[in-house]
Amino acid sequence: MNVTIVDYNSGNISSVINSFNEVAKNKVNIKVTSDLNKIKSSDKVVLPGQGSFKSCIDALNNINGLADTLNEFATNNKKPLLGICVGLQMFADIGYEEIETKGFGWISGKVSKIDNQNGKFKLPHIGWNEIDIKKDSKIFKGIDNKSHMYFVHSYEFIPEDKNVISATTDYSSNIVCSVEKENIFGTQFHPEKSDKIGLKIIDNFINL
Amino acid sequence: MLKNRIIPCLDVKNGRVVKGINFVDLQDAGDPVEQAKIYSDGGADEICFLDITASNENRDTIYDVVEKTSKKCFVPLTVGGGVRSVDDINKLLNCGADKVSINTAAVQNSEVVVESSKKFGSQCIVVAIDAKKNADKWEIFTHGGRNNTGIDAIEFAFKMESSGAGELLVTSMDRDGTQVGYDIELMSKISSKVNIPVIASGGVGNLDHLVDGIKLGNASAVLAASIFHYGKHSVREAKEYLDSKGIPVRI
Image (cartoon, rainbow over all chains, first blue to last red; front, side, top):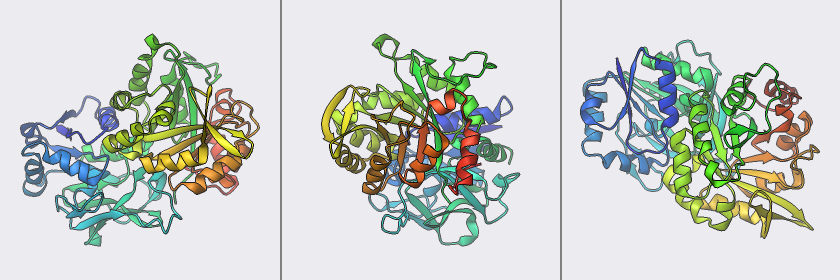
């Protein structure tokens, strides 16, 4: 099996690569590339993302044909895709970080700044927070409710259809921290930095 | 609920741990990778490496250390010490660091913070503030605490937040190494001035100091070196103690 981590200059992806390699051992072939043909022929795709919504979309669009290839992979071919952090946020129709920017629109909704209640909550939301599992997601197999995951973000994804929400976390309000819609999976937290429990999520995705 | 973080910090010189865990069963007590792994297995919420390599020819050793550690530790790894430029930050991130802490370079030229937070995202830019009390204010020191800049630490903290820092690592030079506790006044003043997380550092001698850093200093995270290194307390013990005092921690 081939799992491709999309390398589109979205910031630091070494930790994502390290964690997937750790979990995959020699059973699964982990590729790190932006090569369209390699993505097309992959069984699964991981879409990381750091920095702002706009910077990630810009970086994607800088690689000719990448957005179309990912669209085809996720919506036409319906192969498993995991978005991490801004990778998940880009599933939305629109993001409001820096400037209004269009996302993939795979899951209807918007990405806006976390309401910090006039400074009562510090932003970014950095550190370990518990997840509140809302539905039986395939990537949560063997994961206990209230497990701790590592977060770093200031913006949150607000999907229109609440049925896609697989987990939330409590920070000023119930923030969506994981979604699942058919073959599309996303985590706002960083499984690659969430210790053994995070690696388990990666393992679940690889073994889908 | 967001948990308060405990961050053990390891001083690394020429690729070797200088102050480290004094465990007899360690195969190689000077190996930063092995020590980081022990901490992360023990429940550390993050690991911090402070590179104190003095000579330029050995500076590259830290890249190798970071690369090896990030393949073994799956909690966030922060690296600081001698970070001068956007290029240095880029190299550390590429080796597997999750955050980079900038000290002297941020004071000399805040553009480094502006530029790097734009390029890599605020989430990986930590500004390290070394401050010392002088009469009724705190002043910023650079070059590992050797140079007094006269800059007001609280104003500087605010400026760093505006420049794009994602977190502030605040060390009291008066307290560092004394084991008498954090400078609570400094921590709480900075924490109330900025809206980004503050990591308290410098002066921890016992577990109550960690409690004070969070409860009185309003720090989001507490960093400590010696109480963990010399086997006085494990990270696990520290967390259980904080938990018993009503502080939310990841256990």
